[in-house]
Image (tube, rainbow, N blue to C red; front, side, top):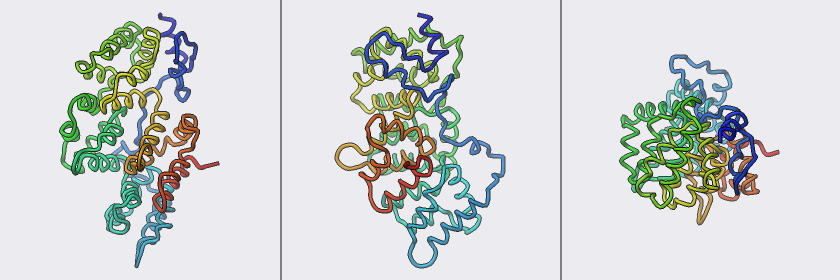
Length: 366
C-alpha cells in the first residue's frame, strides 16, 4: 500500500520486490530523486533573444570546413575531423557562423560536395543545429512514397514539453507547415492516437497531491483492462496515461501495476502489442522510465534483420549524441557488445568513420 508509494517517491533505487521478473522495474539508477523527461535541446538554444557568444573555436571549425571543400575535390578526412568532433550546440553555432563568414549555407555546400549517400546525408544533418536537424529528419520521414513510421515515433514520442514546443515552432518556420496536421495525415489507427497525444506537449508536472497512489491504482486498472483483450477500443486511453504522466508518477503506476498483476507495464505492453502503435507506446514508456536502455534498443533495431536501416542508425546517433556515454553502458549490458563495435559491423568507409567520430566525441573507446 502506501509504503510502496513512499518508497518509490523517496528512493528511486529501491529494489525490494514481491513478484516475479521485477528487477526490470528499478533498473533506473541513472535517475535522481525527481526524474523528468529528458530534454535533448541544449538550454542555450531556447534563448532566442541572446546574440550567442560564438567563440574562436567555432570560427576555426568553419575555416576547416571551408578549406576541406575548396578547389577541386573534397578532403573527406578533414571534413570528418571538423564535423565529426562537434556537439549539437556547436553545430547550431557553426551553421550560423559559416553562412556569415562565407555567404553560403553550410547544408547546401555539404549537399553539393558530398551528395546524399549515407555519408553525405549524415553530414547534411550535422550541418544544422539539433532542432533544425530533427525537423529535417521528420520531413525526410514523411516525404516520398510511404512514411517512415519508426523514424516518426522515435523523434516525436517521449519528449519534454519544452522540446516539443520548440520542434513544432521550428518546423513551421522552416516549412510553413503545421507539424501536428502533417504527422496526423501520415498515420492512422493506434499510431495516430499515440502520435497526436505526443505532439500536444502536455505532459503533466508531478504533483504529489494529484499523482497519488489511489490515482496510480485507477490508472493501473485502466491500463490492465485496456490490455486484456480490449486492445482495439482503448488505445487512446492507454496513450493518454503513458504520454501525459510525468516519469515520476509513471514509475509509481508501473510499481502498482506490477504489485497488482505480477508483471511490469513493459511486459504488459510487449505481450499485447504486435503493431507499430504498440511499438510507439512502448518506446514512450521506455524514454520516460529507462531512456538509455530504450535508445540502446533503438540502435540495435536499426541494425537488426537483413540489412541495416542506415537512416535510423544515423539519426539515432546524431539525435542522442549527448546521452551516448550512458547509452553505450546500457547497450553493452543489454547486448554484450559496444555501440562502437556495432557501428563497425554495420557500416563502412567514410560513413563508418564519421559515426565513430561522433561517438568518440562523447564516449571515447577506452
